[in-house]
Image 1: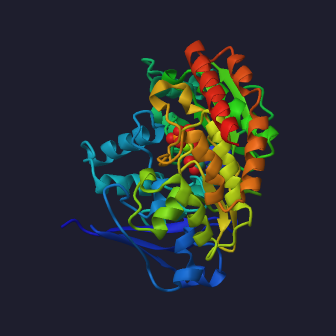
Image 2: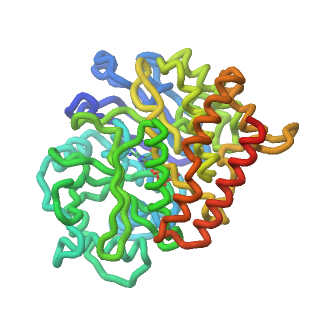
Image 3: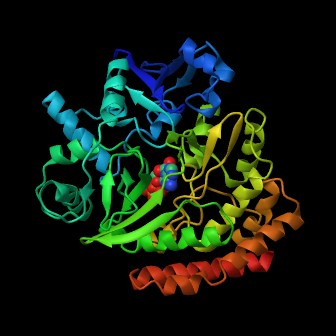
Length: 452
Ligand SMILES: Nc1ncnc2c1ncn2[C@@H]1O[C@H](COP(=O)(O)OP(=O)(O)OP(=O)(O)O)[C@@H](O)[C@H]1O
Ligand SMILES: [Mg+2]
């Protein structure tokens, strides 16, 4: 039987590093125990339903599975398995060097990846192998670093060479040590599109990047467009704009091209005044509360409203959370974003004050035939003439009266009225994607109009 794995969780939620508690993972379950001193601060726990206010001195426990091999909240701190994931490549290189052999696939390697890269990521939870590693990392992250700048020569161009190799498959040599010295191995971040968590200098003439949390700079999620999704970042930026115009809270973003690479820098909203804020995906919240839930497909769209109701019995959530969720689902339907899954919806804040995060990742993935799915969260349209009728009725599953649901639908239709034309006008997006998306959007409008 494999031995237990040990780890620790620290946080900088109060502006300075402090230990939250200890992790022990066995073959079948994982446990987390808060340190007495962290419990006494009353600060947010490592995840909403694992908060110290609910568990106290008792260990928080979770049964492990192949699909969820750590606490659900910690999944986002392990680099994803996608071949374009920059962090997984980087950490596997490090592990290979440490072990002197190929890291074996399985839970032990995932645990190593978690302790190697699971700090400084999205949210307020930092995982390390032990307290010494934590102290060393926080100390190192206070040392000022030289910027990595686009193009340029010598060490500054090493990052660009790495991105061109890993994202664009160009056959280039670079020195990983230089990138690592400058950025640190950048923290793990979830999702399919290659990205780095960096701090950017908004004053700089050329894109200039530093390690996350560098004082005086802006922390961003920097997405880099891979060739297989040409046009994606222009479409994502358009949809961020559309949501903002429709009154949704969105982070600031900047779309730019440099040196043959396309970037979308999205300002991080899990940082506030230099300190991290708790942020947890609905996937993680639901999986922590319901041990039978293992993947998106384990929940139906019309069950989500009741789950938020139940959650609001333990967490303080704004009264309009369900209405806001319904409005986001309508926008996703009308913009061709079939990828609004439970990791693309999140709550920010602790148990005593949390709310839906600003909108992120509204990319209209239905532009690509292989992602042309109405909704990543499944639904059962049996008993409805078509899925437009289903969506028109769905508001009631989110606690809305038929009249209020109709208002939400009318608002979403209005906010997206010129969307097909705006998509068609994006000159850098390949024509087949533009056409497909505009057509999908028009079709969804017609269906929804018919039933509203
Ligand atoms: N502006 C932001 N502030 C804080 N966290 C963010 C922000 N944007 C994204 N994130 C976090 O980073 C993760 C990955 O980002 P995003 O969803 O945009 O990537 P993606 O690769 O497009 O994902 P997907 O696999 O869903 O297509 C998100 O799940 C979220 O936790
Ligand atoms: Mg995403």
